[in-house]
Image (cartoon, rainbow, N blue to C red; front, side, top):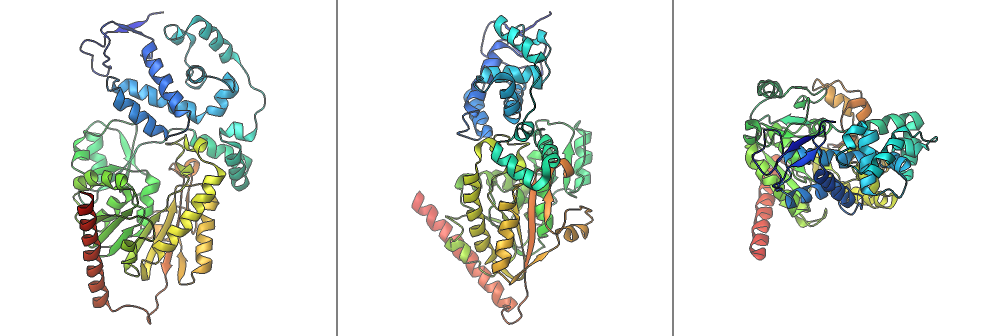
Amino acid sequence: MKNHRRSPGGKARKGQDRTRQATSVETNEAGVSRPLMAHAVQVLGAVLSFEHPADAVLSRYFRENREIGHRDRAFIAESVYGVVRRLRWLRRLAGEAATPRALLLAWLARGEGWPMRQFESIASATEREWLSSLKAQTLDEASLAERADLPDWLAERLAARFGEEGLVALAHSLNRPAPLDLRANLLKTDRDALLAALIASGHPAEACRSSTQGVRLAGKPALQKHPLFLDGSFEVQDEGSQLLALLLQPRRGELVVDFCAGAGGKTLQLGAMMRSTGRLYAFDVSERRLAKLKPRLARSGLSNVHPVLIAHERDAKVKKLSGKADRVLVDAPCSGLGTLRRNPDLKWRQSPEAVAEMQLKQAAILESAARLVKPGGRLVYATCSLLPEENDFVVDAFLATHPEFEQLDASAILAKQGIALACGERLELMPQQHETDGFFAAVLARRTDEAKAQDGAQALEEVGAADETIAAEEVAAAEVTR
């Protein structure tokens, strides 16, 4: 076999990685060396503890080991995620007590389909003998949860909803990596212009199937230094997530609240749809997440966004906008089980108890957010969960106790915008059907009550007063923390 040697201590060729060793490092045909395997095994071991999110573990490891180059980082990340996605299958092959290294080798041999010659420079003779038998191994009939690579409790709940065949199809799509979707910043460009510019710069792409603002790339190139990213012409955002803003339909000059803004991806989309007019509040309980919004906001060119840190959903800053909002988006915190293509560790880190606690939190958030909606206003409740406990159950319970709200037809709202999506009255996106993350959304409208409707001028005056009060409280809080 012809092995490849590279000398990472010297100047690397384009596309190769630099390391700190002065001596040459032997690699196989895939460019993988023993030191790189050691890095991957170490990261995998930390991820499999499931104490922290996998993406956080990877980010921290790469920050602490900056000598690892781009290509090697890709190998580590893709291998770790591959093992986590197919963990039950791999443990059936390698044994329930298999070490992280054994699981990684099994993934490369069976999941990636490496031929035996690829292991000659990175595995011992004993390991290669074991891998040879592993490649020929056949498994006994698996349980439904094992076939789906899901924990038993989750497979049981999803099978009750989708049936056995439906669950297997869903699981197969969730066990594939997600594509890379971008959203055009309508304040600076449009989808067609962005698509043309990306293709011209050597990045094959196509228009997203449903979102009129979305572009899907053919691969996963690094775009952090792309001129169109630096000037704010696009943001990375899953197509399904983009549809939530299209359901809310914010208009110029309105008062809009993104109740659980996080790092602000949907906030920026809403602001661009409002053409940077009106007021757009970005509420969140995490100062760290709101801090991530600041550089994105600067790139976007928006001037109508007001990030507000709140302590909880009943914060006084929230109450000051009671009955004044034209539109409210509640992208509620959830189990995230619709995002397993991107975050496969979530299926191992979640539990029935955590989902039950989340359901209570979601109901409380929806209750508080609904108070902000003025008569005739609209609220969109959304999650990236696949479980009805976090979706239909929450909305049904809310509507049963709030006759002042009515449900609007999500598919009809999208159809009026030229989006033909057979999603039903409530939006339900599935990766195997729509090629997006799993999303749920219900569109609610507050009934118009003329007797309670506020005079327009008075309402505008009250909004301005509330704006000044919130701003003053933010300044006061900043002074205290200095």
